[in-house]
Amino acid sequence: MITGASHNDRTLLEDHRWGISTMRRRALLRFDIFWKMTEDYGRLKSVGATVRMIAEKLRAQWPAEAAAMPYYPALCARI
Image (cartoon, rainbow, N blue to C red; front, top):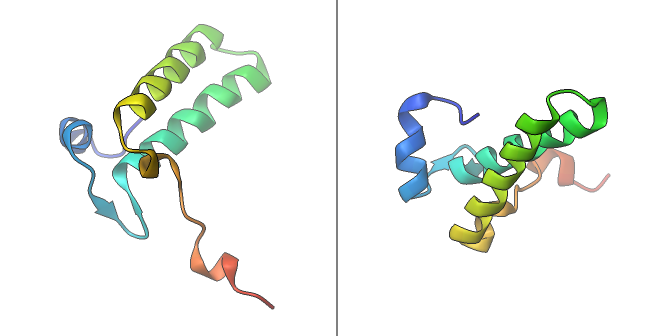
């Protein structure tokens, strides 16, 4: 679920930037997207429930700012 297998162990111990976000933010977003899709489509529900539990445990361990994925600047500009 976390892009780049070599980052998995490092991301658990410390966060690091990747573009405008961080690895932890990206991981939590991907976990959330995955488990929500399993519920929405009614497929792989037990896998989705496991991923949801993992995301909840990581949120409890990591600082709160790890859960807030920023919007891309171009999407925030006022027209």
